Amino acid sequence: MTISGMTGFASAEGEHAGQRWIWELRSVNGRGLDLKLRMPAGFDALEPQARAAASAKFKRGSVQASLNLARDPAAAPSLRIDIALVERLVAAGEAFAGRVGPPSWDGLLGVRGVLMAEDAADVTDEARAAFEAALLKGFNSALEMLAQARQAEGRMLAAMFSDAADRMDALIAAARSSAAAAPAAALERIRQRLEALAPDVKFDPARLAQEAAIAATKADVQEELERLAAHALELRSLLTKPEPAGRRLDFLSQELTREANTLCSKSADLELTRIGLDLKTVVDQIKEQAANVE
Image (cartoon, rainbow, N blue to C red; front, side):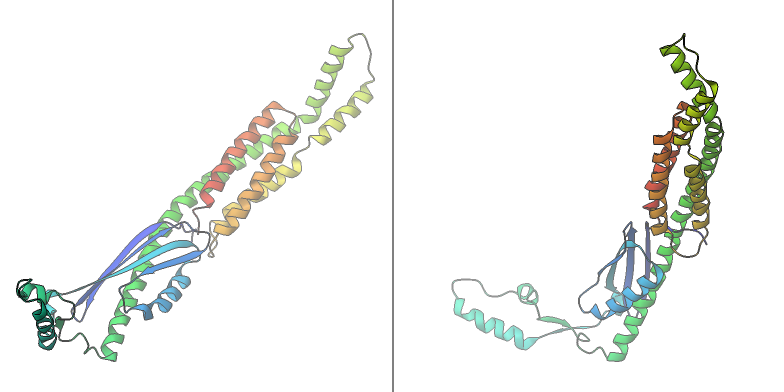
């Protein structure tokens, strides 16, 4: 298993007892899991089960899920006119006779409650439960498709992180070579400075070597390079672990930033400084993309 992203889209649709339904799910980055549900009135009972299903599938990301319903015209129920309500409306309008025209049928039928489906209040508990079960099954199907979309993003991210780890290894190796020459380079810099300041003075070679060793110790970056190499190894390990790696990658990118900054601040060599800046560029890319990982 590889890492998973947090961006994706999925939809699932179906039909049950003449009712067509469609789930649409969209997911973007989020520090935790945030599920926003939009469903028609009367389906609030689905929410706890939908949230439980989403929590079982994802650990991070902002997920928006919407449910839309449409009745199949071929299975539409017959309509019934509430004659008693129509009579009351007509009677109420008689008080305005002479001031307004007589009521029209299209106007009366447009009044809420006049026109009703005959099965509007005749849905049994069993039928309702069966419909909700079909909707939840569809929601789970949409969740699975969304997970596949997020995993596809994760594969692209994993390739980027793997490439970043390779570049880090190459830069760390170059930094080791540059750091190995630091004591000799420090001795030469001190000699050149002293010769420029006091060309006629003879300096004790042992004392020069001692000063060079002190300068090289202050600029020693071996510990930083060891930690950077360990972090690059951990980065590769996170790409193959089964559990979500987003939070670990966030923390790892912070540690990489700290070590790369320390490397640059301790460097007394132009070549090592250049390598450190290249390392910071790679680390910034890792930090930026870590925000997209679940």
